[in-house]
Image (cartoon, rainbow, N blue to C red; front, side):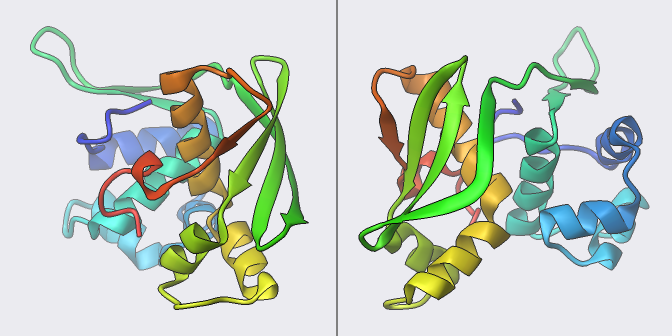
Length: 173
């Protein structure tokens, strides 16, 4: 996965779409950004806002793309990566929170998405379970990438993890 402080280039974006055989429209739908934002970025006429760029990166990563940051000795790149997190798209309700059933490296784990996190994402003081469910579905790729990063950092020691704002790159929401 690309370092949280890093970014991707327009060429990496085009290459990632090519690997997945995605059109700009498919990336726009998966990342929930406007297609012109992607087109302008890929033409190098405008750099996307940080939250849009992070959403694009998260959509690619959730689809199995890995970005290789440029180093002094090697150039930047794009490749398929080994996906360690398998998940269900169905969300379960647990109190006010939502839970995504997943497997990390073959081990069953619940990803708990607290109500407060979903309210922060939507910038609402208190959402309903339906607004939270909608928010989680809209941001599922970002939630899953954050969960995978959390698990890579801490390991899968337990039957569940609870996502926090700290699991997301700055500027995500």
